[in-house]
Length: 249
Image (tube, rainbow, N blue to C red; front, side):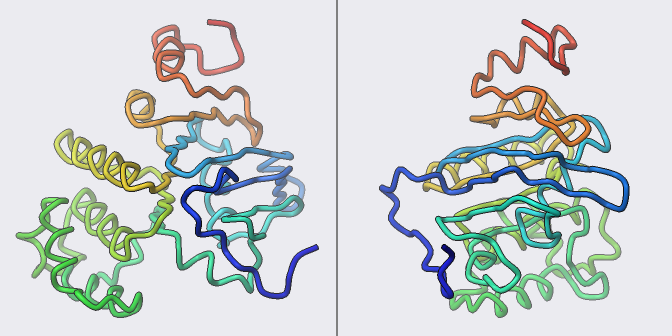
């Protein structure tokens, strides 16, 4: 039975999964995008979701964030069921989707300042300065977002997602538009986040990138989990063999 007010589990020593997805299905009219998908994620993990276009990766992340409601099934974060009314869960998520959620007419600094105030951060300037330096956009803080390249906009959006130091990051193709150096910086940020006990869920089309950062990989196709592994070596073997579907390696 769901309580009227959900109390989030905050004990870092708890062995309960940080996320439980139970038989989630999503239909748009006649089309089934996700079909009874189930998975669990422990605190400190980096779950990477891979698969072809149209596999349901972005839809799954939107459901996990609460931007889209499933047709059936449940999502439980920190021991609490995700509902439209449960805003306390969303406050603990750092989200990067295809849209940057940045105002193109404002500068990078103005955008980050706005979100820092929204999150109620006290040492806003120090946090913004540190993130800008980490993501190599400290020389772009005064530029309007609409004048930035796709890669620089992506880095600014990553800074926005990381501002409030959320325990969970949900990143939809965060490596999209990034050059090699920026990808390396992203991997460092993900590893630092996990070292602090944080959890990461992300999608990517770069399977080599997935093999380097993931502690768990699931391969989606037509809304179903085709295979899953916690072995980086198995992911590499599948890549080398071109084995993206349900075949033996």
